[in-house]
Image (tube, rainbow, N blue to C red):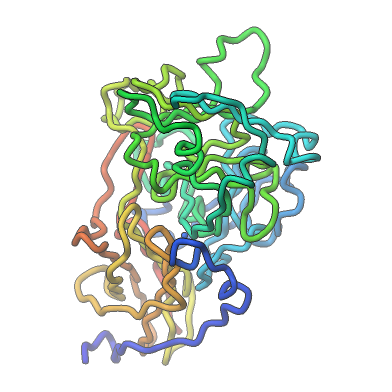
Length: 408
């Protein structure tokens, strides 16, 4: 037994997953800064800015932080220890204003164009539903999740840890659509999805449209989704149809999907050519820089957050392997000097899902810095430090995502 102040031991915790146990997929899985960077919660988490926007008025206002009309963050304590994030708690990130509700009035009539295959065509959502169906549980995470911990002041929403959730997507596997249309044409290297947002008049569409390209290696995991957590995909999250790439950052999961094209090169739309690129602070975005594609392994604590009573305490959090299965999670209550392996909770809902974890510890009165560190199936461990970059993307630092807790 390792000792911290008093003592620490691994322990199980009971978790109720009632409805979530019914979400079974067809592929065998159930189907996923304050001062010195030590603030347990963001300033935004303490002081919500405004009321819910109309298109997201159904969200639980006690579970989200409204940063702007296009950005809502899930409160850290609202993540808690659940496997599947309730839809009304799930964060929102829109690059453009959402279209009108009329596009979800008759979902089956929605049309999507498939290009770059041997038999290109336009299919309705109703027709897609006849090709195949699959459910996958996957983590949805904004590229900028954890941006608030960067000290150079990157622009964009100052996300804490809540621009992420784990949800169940249902739709048709893209590979099955492609097979029905004669396969991908020779020489196509990318899957390019185009969103159906209304673009402002008088602007070059390429400067503002949501169009993203990802490598064709993602074809086997891509689906065209029309359901979120067993219900029709709401407008708020890209309904009636969304391109979902499990294991990839949220920006690649194109909402209001109007076209999927297999292409030889990446799109020259600004959001791809220079946006969502990892580059040094002060450097402009360019096509030769790494793009925000696959997610890395990551974890963070969800409770306790600021205060706890002395004695037995259950430290909860969530962890995922990104594009790989999760292997293990370790927790430290002394800022990373000593580690204990946490217990994973609930069912394993597949490669792309997160796992809640718990560690039972006995805490004496005092100050604690609680951090978690996840490792994926390939042996990749969550890093201690973030990778500094201009836009504050891809922060998986276990140090940044820790919490400072006062025990009395």
